[in-house]
Image (cartoon, rainbow, N blue to C red; front, side, top):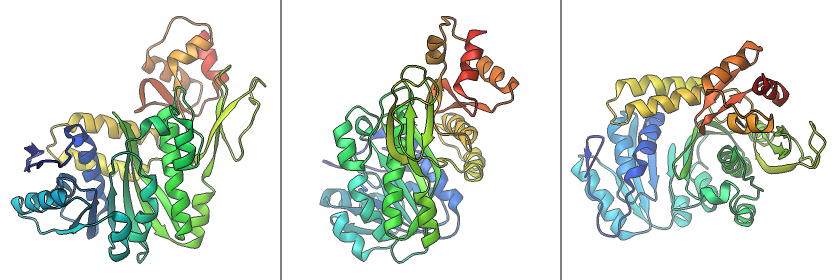
Length: 359
């Protein structure tokens, strides 16, 4: 098989998902932008294609270690590394045992399902360090995005919300879980790039040691209030039972991360690096990164234009670009969001958005 010019095989009983090529490409751009000299652990490595791509595509990757509890995966990953003329260490062990003897600047956690059980393992890898980078993938989207409330409360200690912006809620619950564990290890986090695609949620985060940073991280946790009657949504330190806008009963999700999910400067560098690479999905990656750059710094959660018009009693749905332009004319910021092609992120209050729908 071949992925972005790298030849490899996925042996018998070794998992490989071709649909995650996009995720691997975006993540590799993040590795390249970090700079410095990185030691990388590719946990749950399977065929090893992710770690191999990180090492082959980025000159700053100084050391690569594969980690998997399956012997077939370790053999396969080592064989693929050798085929690509890479030196790589390989550890066959359960991650929860292995991390006590491992350390790395960059840790990739891409399990099958929830990353929640491995968050403590992740920070044990960073325990001897002052600075590290954590790349996390969650494929238990149904749990994080409100389809299964009880598992979300059990695994992430948060209540999800199944509505128009459910994927952003899921992302913020996942990052919250990481933030809580980081603080217990006296570390703070800063999400660098976070996105939702297909069946998964992805975030690459900087983790840095310091009591003040750990405290600051915890102040970025809160709740989202949402009104199913008028469409209001807003963040709060504690959840409300009554909508601040229409005073009708409200619902909430959380606790979750209410800070930034994107670092604008970091994403700008990813955009520049993507231009230099010849990825087969270069155009799709560029579009995604440009949307993420636009989202940086805007308030949490987004608005579905169709829902806004429906709540406003307007059956004529405007084009997204036209709607965004109308919001900007009123003096507010507004951009498209990568979560939905019929939704926008904005700092405009919902009454302004509804007034635009009614015109």
